[in-house]
Image (tube, rainbow, N blue to C red; front, side):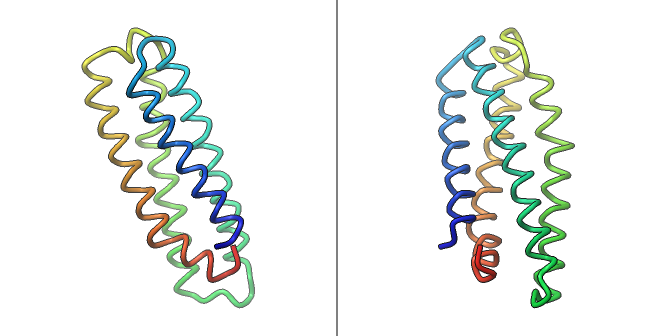
Length: 133
């Protein structure tokens, strides 16, 4: 397994750990954990996009990889803009993170992240590994 993919998987594990902290905290501690998760996820998306752009620019990369990589980046950008950023903005104070609305929205985000991690590790990262990442 390449160092890049190993790093991406380590970031996924850190995100899962932060989700556990969010589950077991409340008030300002929950807000702090949410902020750490937000920073980690946005940095992760940026790193993935940089690696994918680099991989797509390689001369020997096949057309199908380029198409799936572009779709991957588009989906990731859409998820960040339509789900993650609004969620983190909405739940940025101790009052909001201890509400019933938070619990419902958070479960949706948590499930979506679990699905995305499974997709990336099961489907997309093997393609990156074939390219030496």
